[in-house]
Image (cartoon, rainbow, N blue to C red):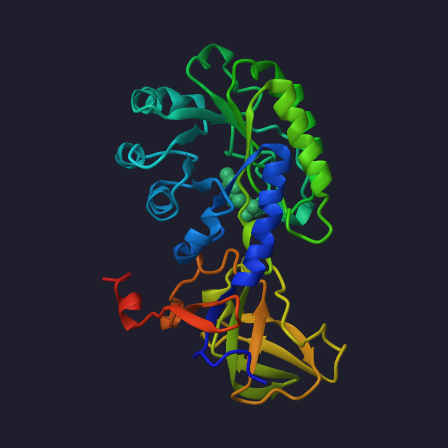
Length: 376
Ligand SMILES: *Cc1c(COP(=O)(O)O)cnc(C)c1O
């Protein structure tokens, strides 16, 4: 049973699934009055931006290139935050951004005048120092003990707030609304007294809003509480939640072999096409497969780079895997296309969309030139 007739490896973004997520987010925005932005760090497939634009207020960027992409391809509001701007980059960012968030008072003093003269709405990223993530998520925790992300209470300088219109915090990763509520309490305790006169408050990303068990009502209530108490526009900037479960990475089995375990070598790679599998680490769902031992035939699914650890994981199937068969990784829209690389000379997966009527359309193909052009 083939999942697609397109050549593999290929990413396929499912428009129906995408619209389901977008409808949930638009509903949150309508009920709460918040504006929701796409965090392009997680997903920058700009050919989908015209569709996303019907549901979201704009984009957020981690620097010049994402800001430019959001401004040129998405429209709406463009927000940008970076831990530290470079002078060259900053001048160009002024062409694209509406909101600019600074990570320190030093950055604010360095660039604030330029930004204000250019008519930008300036804000500060604050660190509420409230870790809500499990210990094994330390690399995703901006509230960790030596974090560089955001201004701590100890480093806060209330005398330098003239011209600041809003605050930003981003502390969550794949979390539910209860962790947001705890974080808001910590934020208010440390910084609530400085909210007077602010125009906006950005609650960052990491809200897993489109997950089945997400408490949307608690999120909406939290936003309404903040909005009414401080009379500010609330922003959310989710990445993952926009495209959760909305994409596939389709691969083909090239070889099977045995070394204590059955091994399938695929035409894709964890290291090149889904690096979060190794980095996070994380186990992607595979269509028609289960945990090892659940079904009759267990396989290590592996990539075809020379990296020994290029192993996606162990999965079980109802039937033996054979060369030529497709293996479909699910939930492959987020933090994938933005992170692919050509290590080992691996070709990049083709990018396609599955239209609402079920047809697959190629959006972009890559070639040898894409590999060569990044080298010299
Ligand atoms: C990564 C990031 C986001 C998006 O996070 P998700 O976990 O993908 O929702 C939003 N804002 C900032 C500042 C980020 O660094």
